[in-house]
Amino acid sequence: MILIVDDTPENLISLKKVLEKHNFEVDTALSGEEALKKVLKNEYVLIILDVQMPGMDGFEVAEAISGYSRAKETAIIFLSAANTDLKLIAKGYSSGGLDYITKPVDLDILLLKVKTFYRIYEQSRKLIEIQGALLDEIEFRKKAERKKDEFISIASHELKTPLTSVKGYVQLLARSVERGDIATVRKHLSKAQVQLEKLNDLIADLLDISKIESGKLEFNKKYFSLDTLLDGVLEVIHQVNPTFKVIKKGIAPQRIYADEMRIEQVIVNFLTNAIKYSPGTTEVHVNMLTKDGELYVGVRDFGIGIAPELQESVFEKFFRVEETSIHFQGLGIGLYISAEIISRHGGQVGVKSKPGEGSEFYFTLPLTPVEEMD
Ligand code: ADP
Image 1 (cartoon, rainbow, N blue to C red):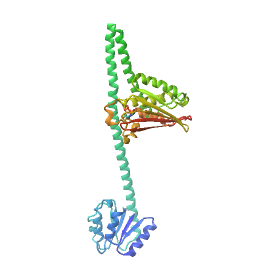
Image 2 (image 1 turned 180 degrees about the horizontal axis):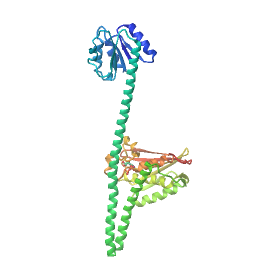
Image 3 (image 1 turned 135 degrees about the horizontal axis):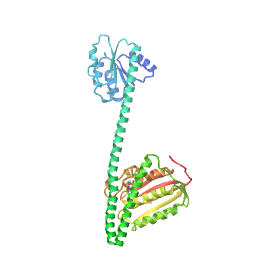
Image 4 (image 1 turned 90 degrees about the vertical axis):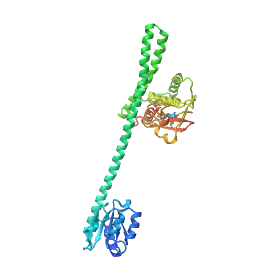
C-alpha cells in the first residue's frame, strides 16, 4: 500500500486517483502527525511525502519514521519545491529507498518511480522469503545430521554388545569342548544363539530402513489367517517372556490380504515394546475389532506410558523418548518401520497413552484388498 502525505487536499485527491487507476492501493494523510499515526498502524511499501507542510515537515516525518521497525523497508519519495536543499533529503533516513520529485509533479515520472520502488520491494520480499526457506532447510538438515550421528553411535553400541557376548561364548565353548563338557557346551550354545538372534534382528531393522529410504521395501501379499499368525506370535513371545500373560480380546479374522511376515513384524514390534516399556507389570492385551470393512488391532500395555506432547513423534525415524531412553535399549526405528509397513497396506497406525497408566499402540487395515499403496 502507498501512503500519500500532503496538506493540500486537491493534491492528495489527484495523486490518489492516478495511482489507483494503475491498480495501486492508496491511503492518504493530511499532515505529518496523521502520517505517523498511520505508519504505526499499517504497513506501507512507499510513502509519497510532501516536504513543505505546516507543523511537522516532510523531513521531520521521515526522520521519525526511520525509528519505526515496522517501516524499515518502506521507501519514501519526497515532493519538494524546486529550490529545496536536496542534501536534507538523506538526513535521518537511510533504511528504505529514497527519492524525490520537484513540484509541480510530473505524473509520468512519479508513476515510473513508484513502479520501480514496487519492483524493488517485490524482489527484496522474494529474497527475504528465499532466505527464510534456506535457513529453515539448513536447520532441518543440521538436525537430521545430528540425529543420524546419534543413531550411528547408538547402533554401533547396540551391535557391539551382542557381538562381544557371542565372542565370549565362543571362547567358553572352545574350552568346554576341549574338556568334553557337553552340558556346558549346550548352555553356551543356546546363550550364543540368543545373542545371534538379537544381532540378526538389529541388522534386519537396519536393512529395512535402507530399503524404505531407497523405495525398495517390497511386499508379498496373499490371503492368510490373522488368528493363526497371532497364536504363533504369542507362543514365541511367551517363551521369551514367560512371566508375561498376553491376552487376546476380540476375534481375529481368518482371512486377510496382506504381507504375512510384515504384519507379523508389526505385531511383534508392538508386543515387544509393550513388554519392554512396562517393567513391573505382567499383562498385555491384544484388542481386535472388525468394523466398517476395517480391521483394528491394538496392543495395550499397563506400563510407563508416553507424555501427550510426544505421542505424535514416536513413529518418527530415530525418535526415542529422551527421559526414559537410558533405561531401555533400542534404536528408535521399530515404530517407524511399522508405520511404513501399515501405510503401504492402506492402513493407519496410532497410539493412545497416559503417562504412568500405559499405552495402546494400534494399526488398522482395510479388509478389502489394497494392491499397492505408494
Ligand atoms: P525403540 O523401542 O527401539 O527405541 P521404537 O521405534 O520401537 O524404538 O519406539 C520408539 C520410542 O517410542 C521408544 O524409544 C519409546 O520411547 C517409545 N515407546 C514405544 N513403545 C512404547 C510403549 N509401549 N510404551 C511407552 N513408550 C513406548
